[in-house]
Length: 222
Image (cartoon, rainbow, N blue to C red; front, side, top):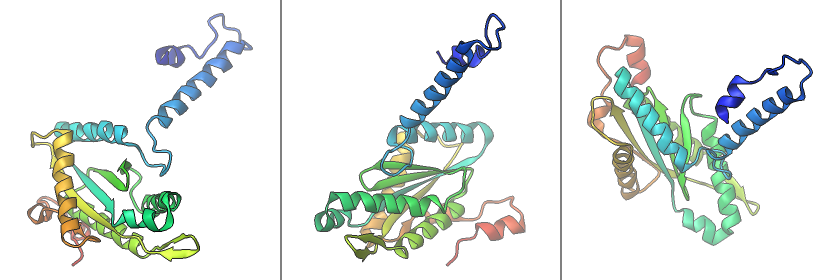
């Protein structure tokens, strides 16, 4: 069907007023819209879990083929059960929407934000080194903590824990293993008291071969 819509946008009889042309275009647009709907989490507007696996596999393969890197950020809203228990699940949904809105405005256009499930999120950062990813995670953490959401007429402060990891193409690593490894840093952040960012310190060294300007941009603020 997709091939038909791609190749037959002109009337086979060369009739410029042929009604089939417009119908084929309409069907093509509808197919694209439906495909996008299957990739989007309706509540937050982020990509869904299925798309996370597809996109991460694609970016890891790109890293393997082109000697690039890709970072993954795993996020968990802190003590989210309290929100549901105190204000109700509808307010919990509003809190999820608020967090995703705050974060969406602060990531790069090429980054891929996904809802992992419940109050957990994941963001894929194509081409990023670990220092860049950690800086972004710290920025997202602070933005959320400094942007309370209004629930039932009350301003409620939200915080989140972050785990960050780096994949470089030389590693023999599956998508599932990369997610699991990043999730361990998220669990570490929760064990350390939440509202913090955890990652492997040894990997956060500025990569060799960058310019002074790039080096300065990659450094993590103390």
